[in-house]
Length: 214
Image 1 (cartoon, rainbow, N blue to C red):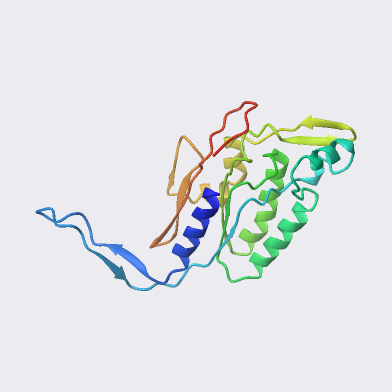
Image 2 (spheres, one colour):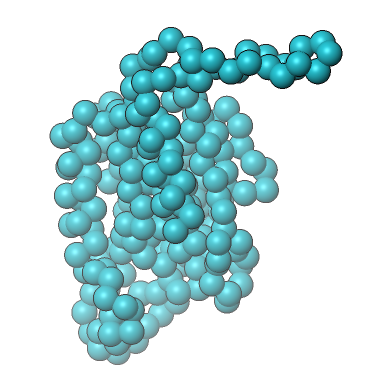
């Protein structure tokens, strides 16, 4: 929820045509710096997706084990998630949005194969001239729920590490970063001379059997 609220606030900040300028440090004598509106700039149009939970169908979509997983999963549409994501990307491609921000939970349960699928599909947007930025959610890193399914057997699948995430999405934020947090996946990029995006990794995760939390 915090990521979604932050994403909404970010959108409102980006589409405004008013640029707030800080006049500088405090003046001698402790007088407060003034704040005034700078010249208007062209708005940056941003499309935002969150909690897309893409599941790579190569991990298995049939059999009793997969059906049992779906039955206890709360109704998410893993089988249709790839097609839904493709449709959403088509909407962004055909829009006048210049930037796409994916604000967390890009994958179903952090399966490395699902991350690889997402990264491959986002390549369509960058080749079309869109800027794309990705940050992780609590499902994406060291998730012990990453699984593959065959018949009546569920098998632990490789989940993504922070290093995997940065390697897969290096062209979608990390290569353009003007600052990176060495202790998390957070980074900052300049979208324009007067607009900065700060992508915050708010997750607590470890290579363990404990599901990451925010």
